Amino acid sequence: MVEQSDRAPLLDWEEIPTPDPNQAAPPPPPPPSEEDAPPQKSSQTGGRRTGTGIAAGTGWSSSSTTTTCSPTRSVTAVVASGDGSSGRPRTELLGPAWIRPEPLGSDRNVPFSGLSVRDQWEEKDQIVAVFVVTFDTRSGNMLEWCLPHDINLDGVEFKSMASGSHRITSDFIYFRKGSYFGLACFANMAVESVLERGARMKSVGILSPSYTLLYRYMHFLENQVRHQLHCPGQYSPLEAFYEDKKAVLPPTGNGLVTACPTWSVTTINRCMHPEMKITHPAGCMSQFIQFFGEQIMVLWKFALLRKRLLIFSPPPVGVVCYRVYCCCCLANVSLPGFGVSVPELRPFFYINIADITALETELSYVACTTEKIFQEKKELYDVYVDNQNVKTHRSHLQPLLRLNAADKEKYRKLTEQRQQLLYSQEVDGDCTSNEEDLFILFFMELNNRIFQTLSEVAASTDPTLTAEHVRAMGLDPQADRSFLVHLLEVYGIDITVVIDNLCCS
Image (tube, rainbow, N blue to C red):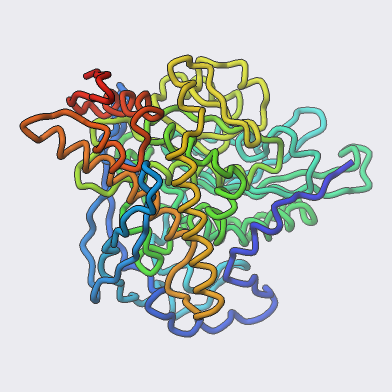
């Protein structure tokens, strides 16, 4: 019995309709408003993660870029204080609005179904590999075809076709392969074939040095996996796609890109960085928070502490890959240089048993899986998420599972701001703000407030954190004491915590 995938609502995010391949390419879209204007292309560099697992760069913290820009704009977010008050408004300067550059390739037609001209304006030619994976009734998952032919794709046949996928008709999967990130689209079609046992299953995927560009090829991959199901072995469109998009790799000797993508504070502004939609559709952050409810505050604490988070879910896994990305967004800090010495909260996206060896050396990550056996591999994770159930086997972390009054007040304020935003959009026609900006800015401002306060106390003549400091950070002096102690330890902040005559340093 094949079940229909429930991911369809989340695919409505794609703003670019799939053109008919038999028709001429559509004309370029009209010039966007300032809110939708993308950035000029900028170069990103970063070091390889060291053997000890310490990030070479700031990871998900802020980074700087040089741009051509127009005047800045701001967004105001209010984060509740731990004492139950409404909190003070905080206006974040989102930086200069970008002046849209001319799209790359705007003077030629788009040769691939599912891709538009505006998909090509940035980071062109960054596809490392393209591949087709099939399920063979005798051999299981197999790599059917790939370009380039000499690239090492060991394990991709399992990463791009999740365990349990035979029960659904379609899915999409984000994953990591060494220093690369991948996106694959899976489809399952009933066939009248005894050899194939009534079903043909394939995945078509790509690898790239960064996951920030993968979303642009979602429709192309969906079209191609359907093409492979109906016309197996016809790879011409994939060959042409690879020749047009293939990356020029740095001469590192091993063919691997040494830098993982970094997150910039400016990405909270859609008009500056359209990559806010890199791994999730519009509304994904909203659905993420609605799915977990108040438990989002528990995930926030574990993310800020850079713990190893593993999310279990049966297929389809695409929506769960979105949750991986959203978890990483909870830990964003935009204070310059802050968090350099702590491990990156690295998104691994989908993992399977073939990734066990790689996970054994990771100090901090967020991943998802469809394989229940991982629950027994407790040495590989700190926090296990099954549906909305967040749990940990680490005794020193278990107090963090309990929601306190300050957590509930922060969540109430977050949902209140969302309702205000929805009202302004419906009544006033406000299209300058969106839920993604609101949610990410809310947690970023919360994180900034905490670390700004801790930094000021540490630099003072009396480095003592009092109950008043804790309330000002939006935390509960008693219930969040354990969280604060772990936070000081992880980030190496040398201050003394004094709360109701109880102290520690």
